[in-house]
Length: 178
Image (cartoon, rainbow, N blue to C red; front, side):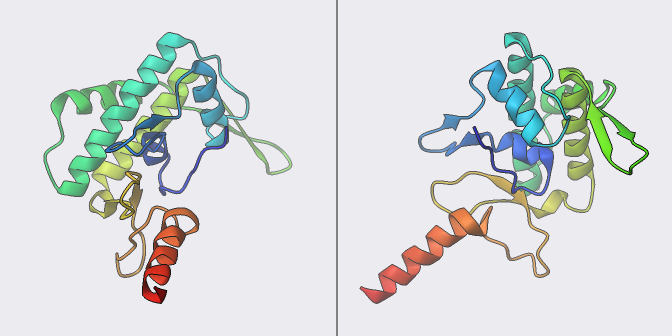
């Protein structure tokens, strides 16, 4: 499975593993192996960490807490205490370890707890930093992906121009031609 990493923050990319939340929700993390694949594709670690059913449940709980917290940031609403507690507990674990090799390359390793800690820390940094209010939701009707709008004017509308933006512009073009 190939995942999309267009949100500008790994925590928002984890939240984006549920597509079309308002209409026909599609969870991309339905098995432990899906989560292990996402972790490697996200570049969090080099080798798939062991993930069992309980680990998947923990990751999904964290994902949903991150989604709700990011929506609160987008809406400039208070953060839910239970979601904050879950995020903080996950962030308290030792994060992924990065090792610098003699050739200048890096390797990353850690177990699932380390990965979830790293993702939680990215969420906490986002939600407490200058980009907290730059969290937006894609303007495409069916898309519910959250992203950070780092455009100069803060006018980005789509999670990704190649997918949602291109479809919206093509639809506008077709409607003008008819």
